[in-house]
Amino acid sequence: MIRVENLSRTFGKLEAVRNISFEVGEGEIFAFLGPNGAGKTTTIRMLTTLLAPTSGTVTLNGLDPAVHPHEARKHFGIVFQDPSLDQDLTAQENMEYHAVLYHVPRAVRRQRIEMLLKLFELWDRRNDLVKKFSGGMRRRLEIARGLLHTPKILFLDEPTLGLDPQSRNQMWTHIRRMNETERVTVFLTTHYMEEADRVAQRIAIIDHGKIVATGTSEELKARTQTSSLEDAFLALTGTSIRAESADPAAQMRTFARMWRR
Amino acid sequence: MGAIYILWLRELKRYTRSRSQLVASLGQPILYLLALGFGLGPVFRKAGEGSYMQFVSPGIIAMVVLFAAMFSGIALLWDRQFGFLKETLVAPVPRVSIMIGRSLGGATVAMLQGILMSAACLIAGFRPAGLVSLPLGLLFMVLIATLFVAMGVAMGSGLQDMQGFQLIMSFLVMPIFFFSGALFPLDGLPRALAAAAAIDPLTYGVDGIRHALIGAGHFSTVTDLVVLVAVSAALVCVGAWRFSKIEV
Ligand SMILES: Nc1ncnc2c1ncn2[C@@H]1O[C@H](COP(=O)(O)OP(=O)(O)OP(=O)(O)O)[C@@H](O)[C@H]1O
Ligand SMILES: [Mg+2]
Image 1 (cartoon, each protein chain N blue to C red):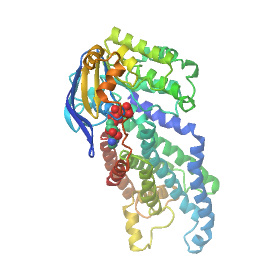
Image 2: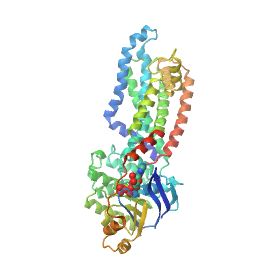
Image 3: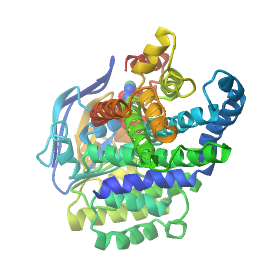
Image 4: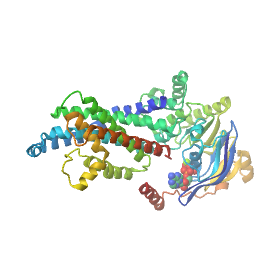
């Protein structure tokens, strides 16, 4: 369903993604794990037509998003890591606009919106502006919105970030059901290892833009001779904390880019 | 179609919901109108040019449309920073529909602002020469709105942060307003200023509105129309092209 070959992306001198290759089968739940700044979001941006790769190819359901972006967009849905709601609209409006943009048939629109808002306990607040929501409520709305249409492939970039256990549980139950009944392929990233262990059928671990291991949770544990996925992850990626690159040089680059336009 | 409608509706909802923005965006032009209209009135009359309130009102109306239109295009930056832009850009909808929806919304808002400003001018004492040419005035407002929404989209598509926004305000929008002849007659200007006015597209918009509302102007109505339509068409193409290349 997803095939990635020798994919790379550089930002100036920084190699965010280096020559990665992997495949995700139809109906599979695939976890893409890695420390902060490893290149997970950058990879998802390239898979979802938001960023052009420096080199390499991507195929989504037989289509290259770099060549046929519009066609490719018909096959996936995404929950972003960063906020992407319109804060000046109500929860209901955010859902409705999404339904229109994603061609959810009018007949099922209302009922699906109601079902999802109830599932994530936002129904009572549906007519409130999103800017009045708490962080967790916004996150729940993002997820509810992402599940509104049933795509072939669903990208979830740290979907459970900042969610309480109740909502996490609801979300994964719902996603598993979509995966089982509609064979939705799921590509997810998360920093909660037990979550990945529980839901993902296969896992890839990326570090410094390179994939360092792929396999089932059992395979990764066996390979590193550890007993939990968390330990396996640490064994593969080391224990040091990653420096994020908001350094002065990066800021200068953004500034330079702005002037060049 | 659905996408165009929904994005148009979004712009309108955002506009009608933020009362403070509405007041703020009309406050400054009204200040211009009152201070300049009444303040420069006596000098203008002494110079034998007639009523300055009559002269400047079309200019201020054009200014309001210019600002609102440019702003709606540049508001892409806000959507980028709040993240909503990503949501629209990955949707299975042609990017050009997204741009059209947003731009129509922006242009509608600019027109509403322009009409509110026209009402303010009437209250301040402005009197249009006749009623028959009012539709022509509206047409010029539509053209100004279209042109500058497209310019705003072309600029906004590349904007990454607030500094860029400020650069555009001070080095593009303000000069466009000041060189347009909104505040002064175009006859007998120093050569450099006349040249600046001639390459400023707003000049033709202001001139067109003056023809329509007070029956006097510098160029002919046809020249105004041709220039505005041509520049708008070009900018819509540039805007659509730049919008299709956005990465977030
Ligand atoms: N637009 C950009 N310009 C410059 N550098 C960027 C840009 N986007 C990402 N990067 C850099 O690319 C690297 C990978 O970032 P990415 O967002 O893919 O990490 P991630 O794996 O998603 O991390 P996290 O777990 O923190 O979300 C980082 O070093 C980041 O600073
Ligand atoms: Mg990330």
